[in-house]
Structure formats: structure tokens, C-alpha cells
Length: 239
Image 1: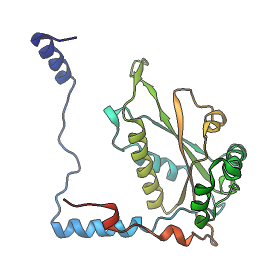
Image 2: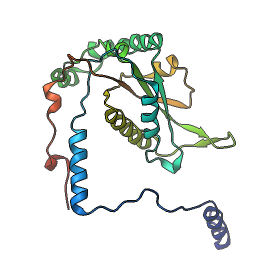
Image 3: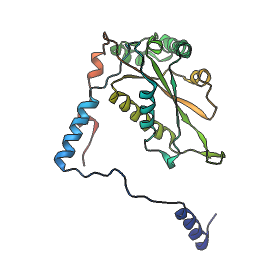
């Protein structure tokens, strides 16, 4: 369909009438030296985050988790639709149900579903089908990707750039939890449909990731292989 010039102008006028710009909030200008110092400080901070599989049963106040979720909710998102939902689970019975369902999928994975090459790649990390941390850690955060949302009137609306938006929000959440002094682990049993069933989520959402979080156990260890990171030259090009 080809729009006339008058129709195009009308459409543009309608779009512009819905656009209400405001001044950039919280803007700060740093010198190059200050910027580099802050970048280095952040690098040092984020390098201290590790994926942990040994958690203490120590409780963590809900307010801490809620604040981290609010930070995740500020992430960049397609058309500002914010296509995510975070289900924060502390109930022992629900955690037990999630563990049993996750381990059923993991056993199939480690019994051959993954393939020999994938399983060999996992050996340096020391993982297996047993996931006790799903019950030990005080919080499990199930992240769901919302395929279709609703507008302010409750009408269905399409969401855009869903994997990208939810992926960025997940990164924000991991950083926020780390900033709160909590250990984290990303867990992705495949398939994860059981999360929708256990947590009674609508069909418009799809499980994206499970974050395990709490305080690391005093005896917690991490695999030496996980400390090996690619060099800057291997992960970036400057042209």
C-alpha cells in the first residue's frame, strides 16, 4: 500500500504528537582520567563475580531482591515494552518442586541428550545432574520472556526485540545482585517448560533463565577452568 504525501504527513504528525521529550536526567561529564578510573574500578568489581554452586542457607531479605529486580527493570528495551517478568521464589516447597523437575531434565541431558562433545566440554567445570543449590539457596529468580503484552487499556500488543531486551535485563540483574554482596548462578535446564507449569505463568510468557542467588557457602569453590578468560585481543577489534 502506497501512502499519499498527505497521509504520510498525517501519520508523522500523530507520531510526533505522542512524543514528549524531557531533559536528560542524571547527566555527568567526566574527564578522560576520571572516566578511565571509573572504568577500571568497574572492571575490578565485575571481575570479582563468579558463578557459585555452593550456597549457604542464610536468608536474604526480600527487599534486597526487590531492589535488584527494580535495577533490572531499567534495562534498555524494544519500544519501551519491557517484555520481562521475574518470579522470585523463596518458598521451600516450590524450590523443591523446581529442583525435582530440573534434575529430571538434567539427567536426560547428562545421560546422552547433550552429546559426547558437549559433555566433554563441561568436564572441567565439574557439573552433573544433581542440583542441590536449587533448594539450598534462599532465592531462585525465574526470568520469563513476555511474547505478547497488553497496553494500558488491557488490549493485546506485540513486543519487540524480546531476547535482546530480556538478555540485557538479566545482565543488569546479575550485576545488581553482585553489588548487593550476593553470589549468583545462571541455570538453564533444557527444556524449561516445567518452570511455566510449576510457577503457573501464562502462555504468553516463555521461560528464559533461572538465577540462583544468596550468600556463598564458606566452603564454596569455583572451577579453575572458569577463571580462564579470553584476552582483549580475542574478544574485541578496534578499527
